[in-house]
Length: 250
Image (cartoon, rainbow, N blue to C red; front, side, top):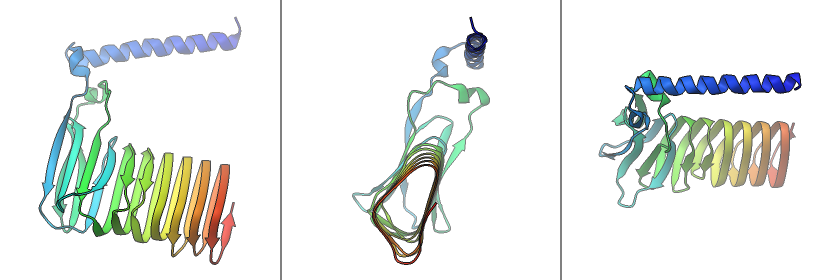
């Protein structure tokens, strides 16, 4: 047997032993009851009666979906684990949706077969700022809304953004796909470390900056003032892209 094969076998054996002891640690943390090691979910629904202009949402692993409300009222529905629930409040004209994680250390080791989800239902129309920050999860913002400025920042997850933004739209992910489509923005700043960026049918009055470290960039039907495209490792595809002033691809 080669040294490389022996090395892989030793590594595999260490991982198996580590996994076994981790399993025992989880069971010990839940007093030997395996059923307690399963993550239990529930629906929490909040109706918003106060007026607001801005929206700030900070979560961890939840998917986030914005939808236009049918009856003109605002509500937030959180499908979430116990002890990792979101607080919903309105302060100084801002709707806050924030994760309150009170889980003990061993509760983070629970077995999870589901994905938390936050559904934000708000009336169609114009709003001030939108700020969404998450760790692992997807974000979807449809074209039913207009924001003065918007920022979406994720570690690992996909972003679909079609709402209009009067000033600057900023979307950043470490790993994931970013789709900005069928919208108009004042300025555009899109950054992905590893993933794919698609900008399709977007009108940008100001500058557009599109950057990816490892991945692909596809731009189609984009019009802007100045365009800067950076791709360290990957491909760049442009089709019907117009920059009124400067055009830079690196």
